[in-house]
Amino acid sequence: MLRDGSDYVKAVRDCWFCNLDGCTACDTVKKNIPVGDFPVFIIVTPYYNLTCCKIYVANYFSHTISVINGFTDKVAVGVIFKINPSDSGKIKCNNTIYPANTYIYVDSGTNCTAQTSTGAGFEFNTWTESPLTNRNSSTPIEQSSDHLETIPVDRYGIFTANFKLPHQLTTEDLVAYSTLITGVISAAVAAIGALLVVPGWSRARKQRTHVRECIQMIDADVTNHIKMQSRTQSLGIM
Image (cartoon, rainbow, N blue to C red):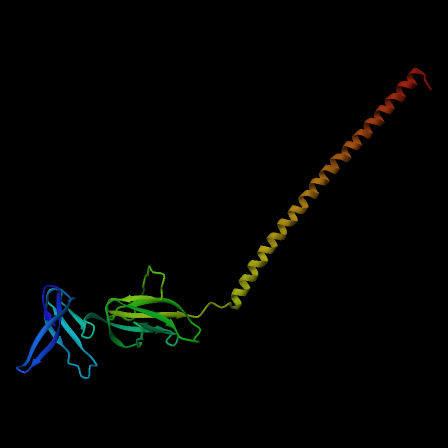
């Protein structure tokens, strides 16, 4: 690992060429690894039996320390994964199940997915994030993709996968639904009743009007008959 440039370091591969004259060491540049501003010091942690290898880079101007995964040559971020409730699911990154409640390093940009535990009966709810310095504060992670169970881990922090039980009808729900249905049925019955009663009122009004017209016609006939009798008597016709 060699410092080169103002904001990245070079990953090199050690190699040895051996012949009859002896062995010669060389360095082959593999890739540039972006880190902080102006890296000045590099420390490589010793590893045995290929169990661990981390490179720490001190960045002078940005006052930060970058951690590099020695096996993947990628910048790593320190995270803690949590699962809520603890027995509801698991977190898988790159087809590997990561431990919960343990401080670990993950390659920056790794996609991690919250998965429900088989037979637990839970379903995924949300991802929340907390800073390492204040574990009592958490904020929802906003996502624009359709796969809400998966997030890119590209910064330090505590990432919690929250699960929930599927919604089940409670006694309060049944009472509320019953009240709502009763109200709807009552309103429908009232509306139908009004539609049935209104034509009856209309017919009754028409019948009453017809009766009054008949009575007026009878009164007119009686009046005319009386007038005719009076005129006949006055003329002496009997």
